[in-house]
Amino acid sequence: MNIDIITLFPEILQSPFSVSILKKAIKSKIVSISFHDLREYGIKKQKQVDDYPFGGGSGMVLMIEPIDKCISSLKKKRKYDDIIYLTPDGEKLNQKISNDFSIKKNIIILCGHYKGVDHRVRDHLVTREISIGDFVLSGGELAAAVFCDSIIRLIPGVLGDESSALNDSFQDKLLAPEIYTRPSNYKNWNVPNELLSGNKSLIEEWRENNSINRTKKLRPDLF
Image (cartoon, rainbow, N blue to C red; front, side):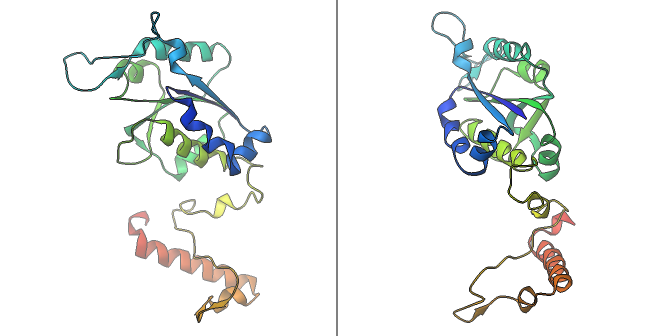
């Protein structure tokens, strides 16, 4: 998978991709991540990328021209499955969306900033708009890191145990069951006997029931 991220602040994204699972995926060449500084495509000598909104109002808006120039430059190198704009009013990210994106080959992610982007970018240049939640961040970089993590971990070869991701919460519209590790008794807080039984069928039955009961209690909206 190849992911190109367009951003005003590439330094914000350096850390999330330099540790743990994402670092492993990049080092193993399972995924390629490239950051593209939007200011390199800015207009005039000052490399301008933002301007005041038409009609007045507070804040600045990212201009269409630098974004179009950057996307056009990238599209000359390869064909993209999707060009994604991360925005609070986009389609709410969920596990199904992450699953779908994990099998794509090439995507562009556009990180907004300030008051957002000229709406013509959304009308004519991007193919998908995604939100990571009903809240507003200072920019799209952190959302991009969250989005990338959610899809990269699903790519075969990224996790040590490929079946691990299939047992995560939301994969089957249920929350994952409770998990425990050693010691089995700590301050008289005990691990459920079923998990210590060594009986595989009993353990799986307990996990399934626990998953259903947790979902009913904590996220009844998933049913």
